[in-house]
Image 1 (tube, helix red, strand yellow):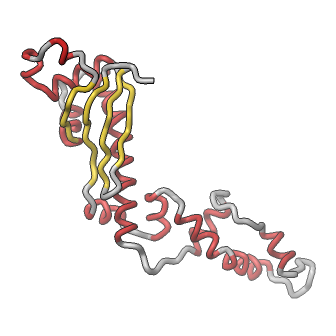
Image 2: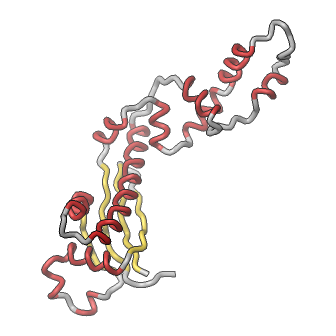
Image 3: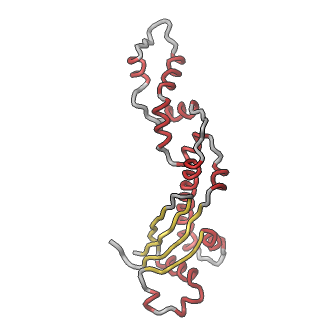
Length: 201
């Protein structure tokens, strides 16, 4: 088993990931990392468990744009790069929200959409709300639209807790934050650190 360890950079909450990769990609990255020194390496260094690397996401993108990169390697590398980029993006957005918490927002429409889509599941249903509030739909003065608005309003605190637990990008949507501004504000990206050449249990 060959693993690629990748540092994910996205503000102050950096992370790392492990990707199982092919021998072909491992050799390709090692040559890219060591360059002309590969031929001068001792044989034991070529097969050691940890090969020090320093390949940034910009360098990975250059490899992907290089027409001489074999397609099989480019496809495998692109899959890893996309996942690492998404992870870095999430970390950057999360850092931005933590450092610049929104002070004003209107969840009304999002709350309605999330409820109707079954994403936000409140602790009590509309029917339970009507029963607890002693609202009878059969009464002639009952107004369903007004009752639904009151129901949504009653979920304000519960919905806020639910939003706070969402992934950063989904939270930023509901806060109405400009994600591009957040990405410009926080350093983000990834860096390949080393290849593990041996199976690890």
